[in-house]
Amino acid sequence: MVTDRLFYIAQSTDEGREVQSLLKERLNIASGMIKVLKYNKGILLDGEVVRGTATVKEGQVITALLNCLENGPEGAPPDIRPEAGALDIIYEDEALIVLNKPANTVIHPTCSHQSGTLLNYLMYYWQEKGIFTDAHLVGRLDKDTTGIVIIARNGYVQEALKRQSQQGEMKKYYLAAVSPPPAQPAGTVNAPISRDYDSIIKRKIDPEGGATAITHYKTLAVHPATESVPSWAIVEYLLETGRTHQIRLHSWYSGFPIIGDTLYSDTGNDSFSECFAPHQLLHAYKIEITHPVTGEKMVFKAMPPKEWGKYFFLAMDKIE
Image (cartoon, rainbow, N blue to C red):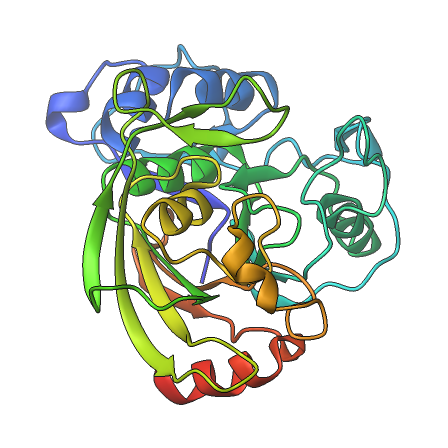
């Protein structure tokens, strides 16, 4: 199945119109991406490279080569150094790649993490396959949040997936181990979030000036307390919005902080030492999308990592 290009057959009402106008109106390609196509020989008319200003006749086939920037080593992003590293690939085609991110891994290079990131490893993997391109992130995960990450091969696919996310067509499901369990077995947290200017990275609930943040949750399983360990639960979340630290902050705010989360936690959660929680037990385990090129409905899943220990086994028994 072709996943690196879009096609459009000109209709009678398109006669005499410019290709670039039809790319925008009929194929919903953004102006920035059209510029990329124009300057990288990415627009074809009946199989021949044409300018964006070329006019069409009824029945002619317009092709947009979405990966037209992948034309050699010069197409590789200079700010991401390829490094050999392990990748857990869930799915891959010429439009996107879906990865299962481990804990203690930053997604992209930052001032403090120039190497050892997921994108460093991805650039090496792609270039070993002869693919020289930038990586277009579709969402992000915190360093110690594990699970599914989607990375597009071009700007069109990235924008299409972001639109799906904004319009609620993309469904993002997470799992977490929390303590104590939620007071209500299911519910919705609607609490605006803004940056906490007393911290470099922390966010806060801000009813007056925060951005809308909505998280749906349901409790999948509850483990009773023992003499040495308080009660805990496995909770599934469905995001309606995607603010930074949204699940972690909403869980803490609602009284069921995520086990292992050292940024948003209460002293009552300290009963769980590192031997029980090697990192915050939050995992992006399922994403539902419509493929931006083929229109196919797709579901990607990734089970929580085994270092979750006993939390892993309880979660495995409860998720679909």
